[in-house]
Length: 222
Ligand code: GLU
Image 1 (spheres, protein in one colour):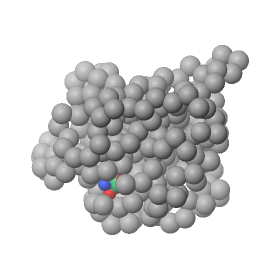
Image 2 (cartoon, rainbow, N blue to C red):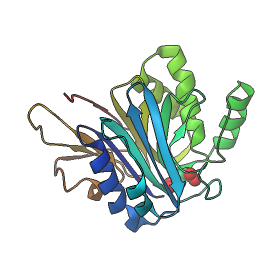
Image 3 (cartoon, rainbow, N blue to C red):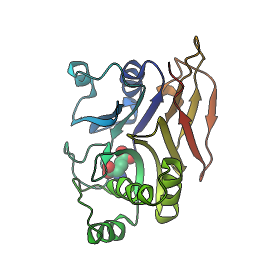
């Protein structure tokens, strides 16, 4: 179980790049970022040393992003298995800590319903399940909520959708905390992470989620 950080605000690239490095103490084998970039989800991920992100061109204009350090439990240490994991249409991206115990049954059912998987992880079922729910109710937080009863295991995850101006996080057994940033000239910012250390340099206003609680943070950036 490694690290998650999500951010909504005016300095996404800075916060995520600094935050992910603060989570490396937990150990990891691969890393990844997902940004809502206009009306698209952009994913950058790789195996190995997260210090290498310094060489990547991360979009400086995105107001919404997620990132992850992975400690592989299901699926080898490969770029394809690094998080975030997207759905078939690349509209949704998910970063996850923990284990989805019933992922085999869920994956089999999803494949039978036509979903195409790109990784060997347990995590990827979450993105595809949200994709299905979203097609029914057209509401991202509700779609995430609908998926929770289908998952067994100990997990926390944060999800982003290309058409939703915010992030949704869920905790069940693995840690997840929300940080409320300082309003700065009308620009508010929010953080969701597996450890406050990821964002403590930006805010000390923290909400610890209980198991079964969901956090929805929305962008009010100018
Ligand atoms: N079970 C997931 C995987 O193997 C998440 C591992 C983690 O918590 O980093 O990708």
